[in-house]
Image (cartoon, rainbow, N blue to C red; front, side, top):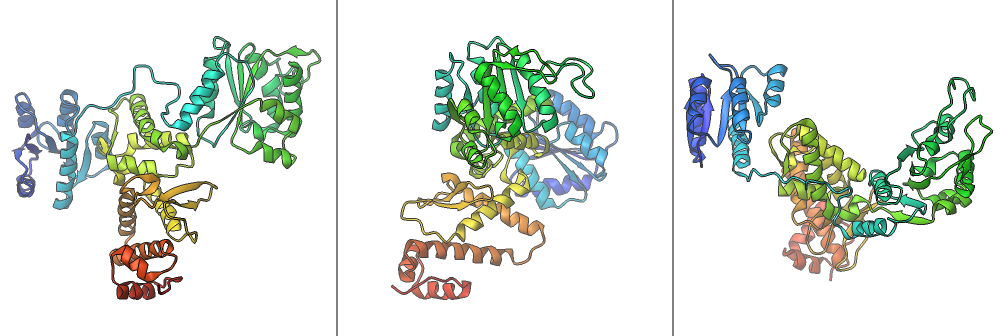
Length: 504
């Protein structure tokens, strides 16, 4: 392994870092200025470069710029006594691995250098997508069913209703249906009916004649005319106002419509694909959606699974979105550590693919270093997941042997939390350890005292409650299963205030 280079005009800083890294059995090489380091780069390179930002002659930013132009994969840590906004922004814009302000804690500095070292030693090849990215990514069985349905409908003009949660990719499916249909060479027009004010939606759909209403200075073609011979995708169809549902039914029934203020019927040769996240049958029962329109739209129903139903697709989606966002920003794509990827796979992600894409954009901009760990992810993710895990531990239900525990979340979905096989959330081994680390970090950063005692009580309580559920309250049997003594479990039950235990 190559040495770690330290570039600083302050001899005491160089000495402290050299001694601290030597205790870690890490080789170092020091330079008093950037000029000497630049000269040395002509015949050797470091494993990690640590540089002051302000020095006589060339600055640390000059050195950073040169290193990144010649060795883009080399991690550079910028250290400075001038911890101002401009310095921080300039360092990160220049591609610095991290920014450390003086005075710094030597242990934290060593830990940061260790992280940079791991990054440098990690294989530098970044997984990039194929030359032509598939329209829809997915290897899960549920997505394969969707692909098969698109294939079967490829040569059909039949009306399709796509259902699925918000953010699950319904418009992508609609575009795929259009692309593989006989109408592929014609327009694909999309309209979110929930995003258009009620007073404007009719004009958006059917167009208007000049003078039809105040402000209608010219005749305007609506979406049906724009999509002539092609496909019209109406998203969130369940939110369409009731009176407009009647007009849409008329178009679907006889293929004719009128512009707003018009008297001449127009012929519509358009394939209509609709989508909704709502239960249209329930809206029909509630009198909010026309039953005859529902049956007209529901010729072929294609249900798109939520991301929770296709967790095995999360890794490929993450890699795709990280590469995609990196290209947009003109930076090197970030990589997820195995632990961080497992943690993402265990999340609820109620926003589905859209939420995951937004998260990857955040990671590209905000996460330090090229390899992203659990602690680099937004703190609210761990807090939400910790809340889900706590709810699961306190759930009163008693699953049968071999079944998985689950908890009802605020958005009405059931999420796997832990199974009888001892695996963590979503069947991922040790995912709970990441949650524990994140919860501890949150408590420590919040200044909470006696974190070990608090989390220890929660841990013991969760274990004993779970064991009692499996033994139907028999505490002696539970003690055997947990590998503790009878007196110990009796004492713990009393200390923790656990109810429902009984003698065998």
